[in-house]
Amino acid sequence: MLRSQSQAVYSPENGGHFGLNLLKYAHFTSPIRRYADLIVHRALVASLHLGEGGLEREEEEQLDDIAAEISTFERRAMAAERETVDRLIAHHLADRIGESFDGRVAGVTRSGLFIALPEYGADGFVPVSTLGGDYFVHDEVRQALVGERSNLGYQLGDNVEVQLVEAIPLAGALRFEMLSSGRKLPAPTRSFHKSQTGRPMRGGGAGRRSGRGRR
Image 1: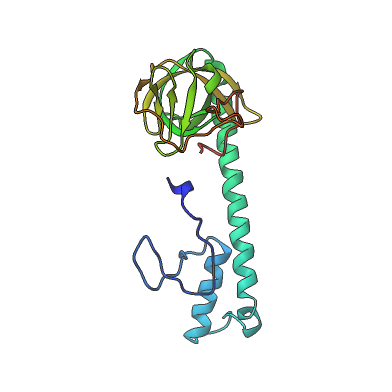
Image 2 (image 1 turned 90 degrees about the vertical axis):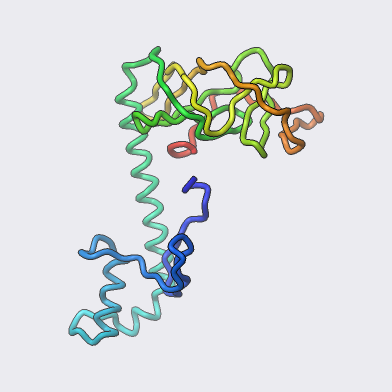
């Protein structure tokens, strides 16, 4: 859910905090843990005349560029952290091929389902081509894959049982096969994907993971 929201950015302009319902907000910690914290602390030193080390006028004029740069580097750090965790989890589960796990549908695309394993903090993918003999339609509105003939399918948030069939530690990727039968779902809404011929698009292939769940 967090990844579906707009990402926050550092800025010298005080835009408040939407989630906390604050008109004025500054994101920093004490003791200092990152460069953004250092900027805020130095600004306080300068504003309150607390001594040496305050923010200089020339630096204040560069705050827009500084904010943009630290926002970029924070995203790089978060991406690196997620990638590292994904690789470690895939390595940890690599010797458990064939085992079954309790999971939850964490993402739905026309190519398949992203499955989260809460017990392990892991995420993997179930290709739509492995879901069975039905023709699965991607219902974007309900975030579901629905069998065209049976109306059985899987929806975002469903609890499912999956079997691990492939783990690639270097890529931080896990591939599952679905063990749980789909549940009865409403017929797809009008916003489902269609091919160029006008028929519903059926995904295929193993797909790629998007972060940790895709996420």
